[in-house]
Image (cartoon, rainbow, N blue to C red):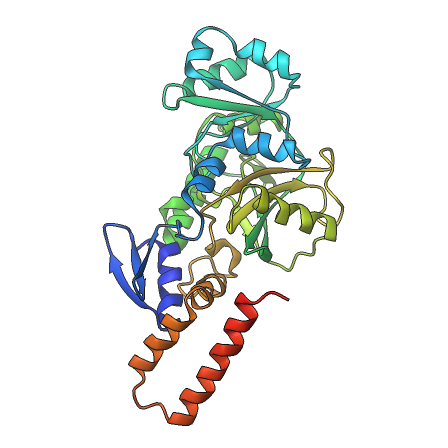
Length: 361
């Protein structure tokens, strides 16, 4: 079972839900009364399909947030057909985009796949867009914000559950091996420790990133020198995470919650690039990159390979409040030896919960 689905599954079992593993889903389904909920990979039944579809389109998301005064990168989208008519340069000029830029698939990508950062000129942009459009129906081009810290803010039901600092992939020189070998060594180490999906991939972005540092894959860095090999911070592309406590100012907290509200996402992973989360982002010192409808929840744990996730547990409790009577009834059936006074206390608690949940002051 996928590790994200497994975290939800473990929490569901711990809470006493009726769950069935299903290998076809790489996940499971959960039955509450007559209600059936499916969990597949990192996808959950919490967000509706329309909100999911919208948030998956990077350009539409960017424009919706922009129209609601959320600081985002200046952006333009171009389809494969428009590209074939040589409209890329025109679109960029019309929108007033400034180089360097980021180019990425328009939608339905995952784990940072296909994202090329810090593209310096139109010729390089044309080449990268052409390659992406061989696999995708459209691309998004947006201004690149370099030199900023990257954060993932996990929002659930209008509350911030967790904040994680994300760092781009890097290797450390040993004075013996070249960068290509160091990458392979690091990948081998990660395969042994935490799985193949977190490897650094050799692609155009690595060449760009190394070029900015005056390096190539054949260079042998001095012992102890840190070499960043890409700008994208996805764990699946070799990035690392830091779960040390992170504080956030009220303004940025409100922005993150507003992003989820605009996109109508009950569960969202908000990607932020900024100098400092304690300083309000304004489009210069920081921006919202995107919102993920099926966020990585494991990254918010101190050990990203744990099965029991405190974040997943908090999310799964939502289904108790969604179906309190069905849940309590199922617990009674499973615990037939409960004493009568215990049943009475649970019933009283149920009344209190229902009153607090359904009756607004």
